[in-house]
Image (spheres, rainbow, N blue to C red):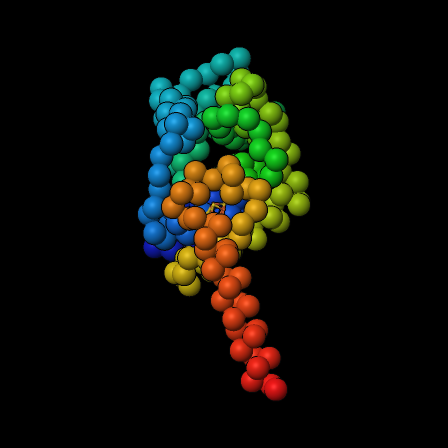
Length: 213
Ligand code: SF4
């Protein structure tokens, strides 16, 4: 179990799942650069948090709920948590995350909301089997089951998050297709850093071969 002082932001799971170097540039080096897409995404989150709690068709809707897991060492805020009616108890929690843009090819968004579900389960001591992500394009809610594979990946990323935070070292760039979608590409310069790593590696290999001769 972690302590309150160890807690790291839930939102970091998404960055880490996308690219470990991007996570480090944002969370270790504070090199966040906002572009049009990230600004629109931030505004969408802020709107999702606005407004007071309400009831709709028997569902209690809570906005901006603070979340925490001492087991995973995570802290954050849920955009929306709905409490769906059930036979007894306060209602079944159903987290809803708001995302600007389209569904992603990877599970980056999914691990973040699964992290919220794991926090809710620990805090409320009830199962949270499913939730949803609302995407701006198209304006549609996509349901999500928190199955064992997604839970396992989320727990692995949470452990890795603490490992990297404790190490405090920005991982090297690994140039790939995801770099084209990265908001930090101009800061990271993956072509230059990757080719420099390859040159260093090649130089080390040549030196080792010459030493053996
Ligand atoms: S440009 Fe590529 S390697 Fe660099 S932070 Fe972004 S995704 Fe990671």
